[in-house]
Image: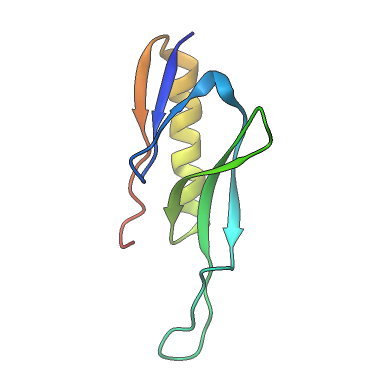
Length: 92
């Protein structure tokens, strides 16, 4: 089953090399807004067979990240040979 995932960052991932795809809260790049409130980004991460974590997409809300993960899951269940492009998270 040859499936390719195109990340928001212009990289192409071979699905066969991924062992896990999930969403994490990214505090590393979080910066305070004008009110001093620090809000993290939510990042879709793929883990390959070597244990490397590969950023796939970045989102402002956990709901947006989870919705994209759900779309990817649905696509993986119905497509045999194709390319899936990770949706944009809006303002990046």
